[in-house]
Amino acid sequence: MMSEAAPAQADAVRLRSGIRALVRRFSVTERADVACCGITVAQAATIETLAATGPLRLGDLGRRLGITPSTLTRNLTRLLEAGLVEREADAEDARASRVALTDAGRRAAVQRAEQEADFGREILERLPSDRRPVVVLALQDLLVAVREATERCCPGAFDHLMTDYPERGGCCDERCE
Image 1 (cartoon, one colour):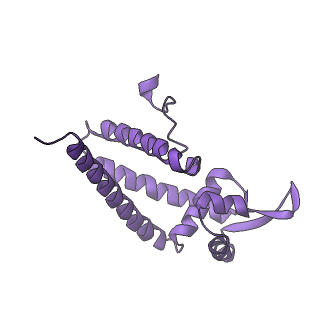
Image 2 (cartoon, one colour):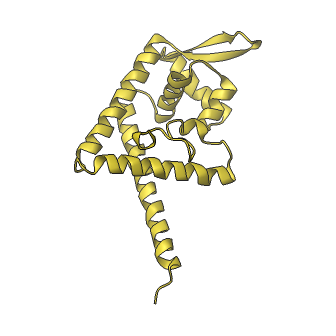
Image 3 (cartoon, helix red, strand yellow):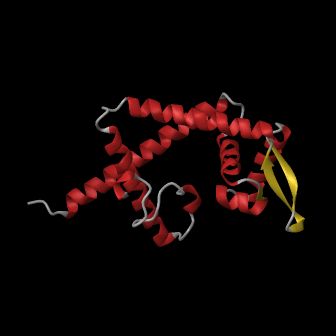
């Protein structure tokens, strides 16, 4: 007779394998999408972050992106040269500067968001229509669980990535209304 731990372990392995496959697939998709726009995945992440937050100090931007100062500097140099971001004086600290999107950077962020939405729609359209809401809600539940598990080792580390996924007890869908 098989113990309950064996199927649970097998499910955990399949879950991790499935997540890894999704991450790899979306990374490839991002690279393909951004390559046509002439920027790297890291540069796209910078633009998306600035579009979501508004101007940020360099240290805050680097922490949000999870990259080193030297990597951030390289990304920003290319984005500055492309006219997608600009540096501005920090009104609160004259020694510091902030990075902000230019008009061209905002247009690039909108274009990128539209590409991602189109890809998401294409994925959902490949699922049976009656299963789509179930899949989306299950993904939300999965991400909430990932957030909780991550909090154990890295409190707050990924909060900026999980703004659409509340902690358990909070809710952002019609099930709670």
